[in-house]
Length: 265
Image (tube, rainbow, N blue to C red; front, side, top):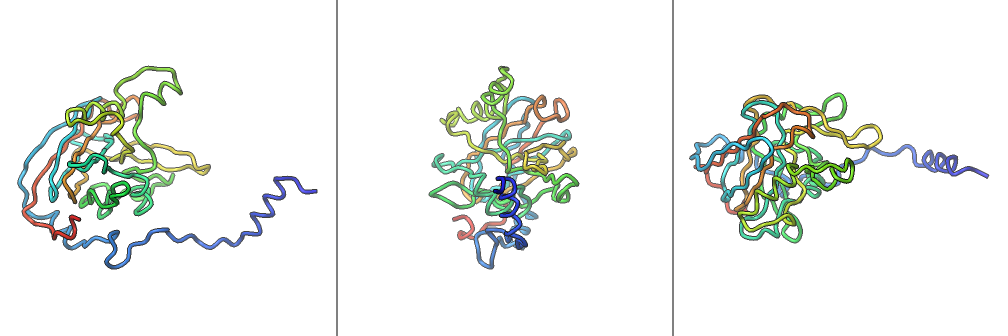
């Protein structure tokens, strides 16, 4: 009689050779997963009109609005720093960023020409990445990549479960406070994209974080595909081992290059 371990080994051996997997979602010509790179590059390089600019200090967050066609730049003005970003449709907050589906449609870590998608039943692009000064990072020797969709925001609840400690400046808390002036509450805060964060899975599939590779002046730029409300938390130093006191900056511009209506739907 075989043991469960022997039976499992035999069943695994019977599966071999396992063909190399093919990504579940691949862009095809005309697919919403494919963007017109020439058009988006032209928009990214076009003249802009600055409409808003601000800096987010340590242990805080901020929310702001951006109209369809706006370009939003989120940067690290002082050096390495991570930011947790939430997105809602400005007119209907039930439509919000869906990190899991975005991860399936594009990748676990996103970069230029990837899109950030909304939840069901809306299922449409909210933002498209049009520039990323960390696109050179690729995959490091440990399998880490930047701009993370694998993990999510830190929060006071798991902190209390694991350590029993009380701390009210997690990204979840910062995002909650930031959106209150727009009539939203804690229940509206959702899974984030961790900008400038390097993460991956180790050989046992366990989540890990690595130091942020951003330098002073690095940035990610997004094109708003619809009117959006955005909220950004400047990640807690004590949790993510990055340079103390470093801030994040956001800049919102209107582009002089108009998008075709079909891209904004």
